[in-house]
Length: 182
Image (tube, rainbow, N blue to C red; front, side, top):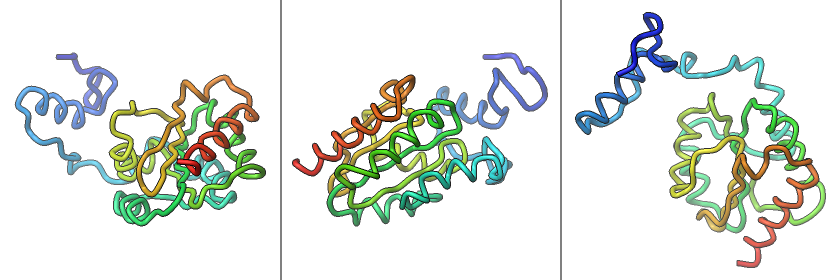
């Protein structure tokens, strides 16, 4: 077991979360969100800081998911191709992912629907999106391509990081085309 760094932190993880995970691993008990954490405390970043990053995708026509129910409602009803961006605050999201997605949305095949969640802040919705991406490692930023509500393909952070936005746009357009043809 890690020794506490301070009263709230154990090995870099909030003490409540650490002990919930430790209990789960030791006993198999169900993991529940600690009641002591409010939604505001669950947010990794101040909303004022990430609002412009959210808007980059919303202005392109992306619908934001904030709750697990939103994800389930929209993906279960989705017809055709859905583009899902797991947005993040990191540099590769700012330098490559969001600009690349913007380029892809300008020219090339368009998805029938476009959705986004913000990793670190839309905790519940992000976790639910990842349920639809079972078999894929959690990654942010990342881009999921869905066909009729089922995962068709995914671009992980490793596919995005260090690439020029035009390369990301080509990957997104290729993934949308592949889903359309499927």
